[in-house]
Length: 131
Ligand SMILES: [Zn+2]
Picture 1 (cartoon, protein in one colour):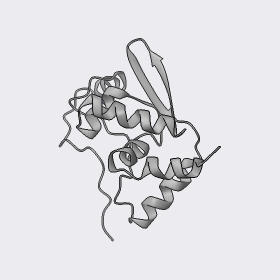
Picture 2 (picture 1 turned 135 degrees about the vertical axis):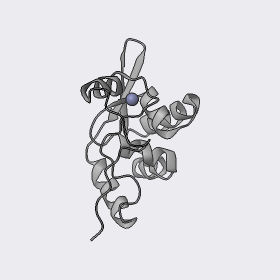
Picture 3 (picture 1 turned 90 degrees about the vertical axis):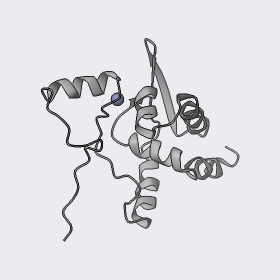
Picture 4 (picture 1 turned 180 degrees about the horizontal axis):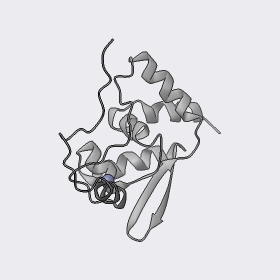
């Protein structure tokens, strides 16, 4: 249990890892989805995922050739919420994004469900109207 809180904070103190954590808030995702989401090389993304897993924030499971990551302890969401609140939520308050270039099973299923309807742009995140 040595320096565990420090490990957690260190794990979050990195832009790519923070984005990964926010992307995993609602559900598990496979490495290829996170790679497409971050637009980084897979080796780089895997490295960040490894870091988060070692810090005890994520757990992984294999399904065929794919590796899925999920948040291990939902209490970390409180920390993410606090961080997001401090930055006025600018740092990713994500609804799940279907990524046009992603070939993960979830993106493919969601694309099929929308009946091949074209996405307006690369980011399909709804923009909240400003008050
Ligand atoms: Zn995907």
